[in-house]
Length: 437
Image 1 (tube, helix red, strand yellow):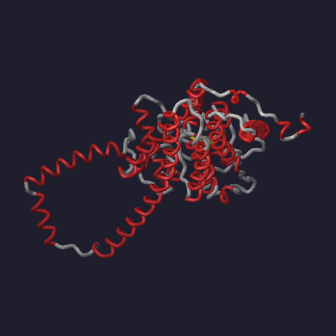
Image 2 (image 1 turned 180 degrees about the horizontal axis):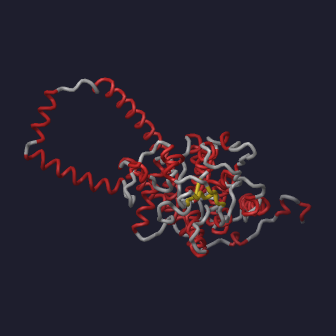
Image 3 (image 1 turned 45 degrees about the vertical axis):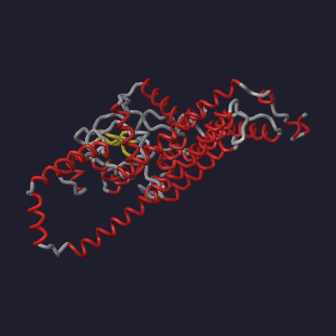
């Protein structure tokens, strides 16, 4: 599983000042995440693929002589192009930002050169095809063992589930370059303030960006990305480092979760359902003890329940947002111009009472404490605030998900202490194709 996760990784461009050891450590960390939570890697891959689709028609002809393919868009979104302004600012761009700068006339020279990506890409189609062939052979071997009534270990079932998930991830990353380390520099004769001024961003709003000054072009947080950043900020406080940490950022983080449409989200849910269903094939598995069997069943059920709880949260949030929008529109129509002076006088008298001030002070302190939980970003980014009604259930679900995943891995190892003789037998392929014998 580790080799499979390592081989399908397509990380974003490293920072200009990062050493090879930092890049290697990041790849080990992402491999570990892919082994423990392969569905998150798939969600990231689907989100990156989805981010290429809405502007595909626009990106297809950025210039008269430039035609952007999916591979080119992936190369841009992984930080393959860096902007260097007249005043010396330098930061990575994504595809939407390149399109914006090109249509506004800031980028005049062609940025696409034939075979640019093929020269930088370290993993070609042939290597990825070989990896998929190896994965397919393992799946065929497990199916052959099951057909011939040979013992299939839980470790093999876990690997099958992981392979199904990783194959989907590799499919969505098929056009994404891998192990690219050198970005292309785009120089323009305009400073950053001029770009922001022409975009209608005043001096008081210029410091509100988080990653780069061009965040206003393409940055779009959604509920899952906010929860994900909240979790990463907790890890940062535990001295786990993520990203470059500077402003502007030196690289586009691999942990960025692009928004998923409803269709894409249900696609991920369906894929995860298939992967989790593999664990239910061991419902009557011959475990060494009865307790291990019960724990395996509990872990399998927990994974499936947590998955569909995610759908419930998603649909509830959509419904709540619609109700809030309609309620706000209704209030603006009926109460914006009709204020009762009598009610205002009563409220002002109530605020001046001693008990009201004490209660208000208590609630203010509680609200400040809860705000630290809702938004734990170091700079207090207002776009990363998460309602507690979302944060609390997601963290509970995450705990049970991780606990179930960890137990399944432990059970795979514990089962090795007591295996039947058929577990060591090999598939007799001549029973399927007699001419092989």
